[in-house]
Amino acid sequence: MIEWMTLLAFVPAALALNVTPGADMLFCIGQGMRAGPRAAWLASAGVAVGGMIHVTLAGLGLGALVARVPVVFEVIRWLGVAYLLYLAWGALRAQPKAQTDLPTGAALQGAAFRSGLMVNLTNPKVILFVLAFLPQFISVEAGSILGQFLLLGAIISCGGLLVNGSVGMMAGRLGRAFATGSGASVWLERMTGGIFAALAVRLAIMERI
Image (cartoon, helix red, strand yellow):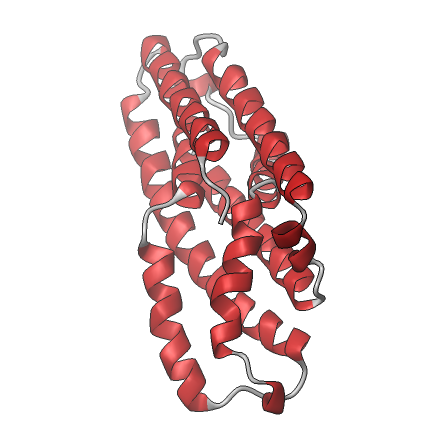
């Protein structure tokens, strides 16, 4: 459906975007530090699924609504700010834990996936980026516009899943190695809360494209 030459140009550009540190990578680092490597991978998976939802909306033409109607953009953005601040508050008020009490359960891992999904979906910059970047590699003659959006979006999402998950996993292993006592676990939670709060501020003060 998409010419090989187009894919050869797109894949390196997508890889460069994946390895560039950004909000998604920082979020996965925070989840890894707080809840371990598996939570980092699940958070990365949530981010990837959120990215595909953005791509699908853009391919269906609904993304143009966000680009053209300022109030929709602002509502999504401030929902994202509120959610990140909620996550930051939860991390900052966490009680001291011994290393054996660090969270590893399925409930927390599921929360990591949901959090990654929500953080991505409530960042309106993602869909605006999709609208600005992907059409450069899409051709009307190549067939279904939605199909091309989905294929290119899947390439970016899979790359992001691997990169963000790997970085978050390393952060999670370091966090587990340093969390040898209750005091260390408190500092890990505070660092994670600081990351979430910084992402909220970043989202709040960013300029609309």
